Image (cartoon, protein in one colour):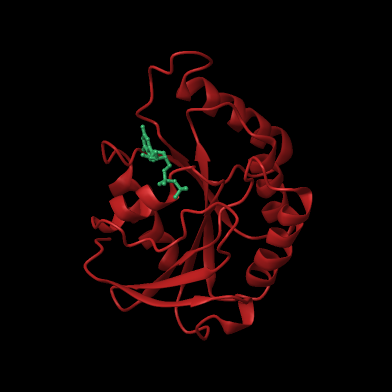
Length: 200
Ligand code: GDP
């Protein structure tokens, strides 16, 4: 399950510009600031592998990374910028829709969810959209080290609330993994999970 080698392949502005469908792919998706870049960097144990722009809403590119010359990590633009007008969100959904609905090599979407905040409507909407379109997903909870959140609920309580929603809305509960990019918690479990999915 180890990541030995990561190679940046290309950034695509449109789904149809993506590399040809020749390898298994995992798409990584989540709200802006959810900890996506940190997680990718922790998984590959390198700094600044994730090339996503840090300017919310500015860059909307699909970034393909080839791992161990055998499968792709696909870094998709973040969603749910606090200040983005509704139009920008719609734009995101048309863009990613194009990707999700046309990649037969997509093994699963890793949907990142910030465990340090209560369930966010936009994450739940995204999970619903993926579910409705029969796109396999794994919930990856980020920032699980933040157990002493000053105010509000703790990550385990947030997770419980989130999972409650999922139970109410799905016949089958998608797999979920708790992670922290600060402590490295969940890293090996996530890598193992992905390698198991690839072998099915
Ligand atoms: P992105 O916008 O989704 O790529 O998010 P980043 O990876 O840039 O992270 C957003 C913020 O959350 C940064 O301030 C990170 O330091 C912080 N962060 C990311 N992952 C973790 C984590 O596992 N634990 C904690 N405590 N903070 C994190």
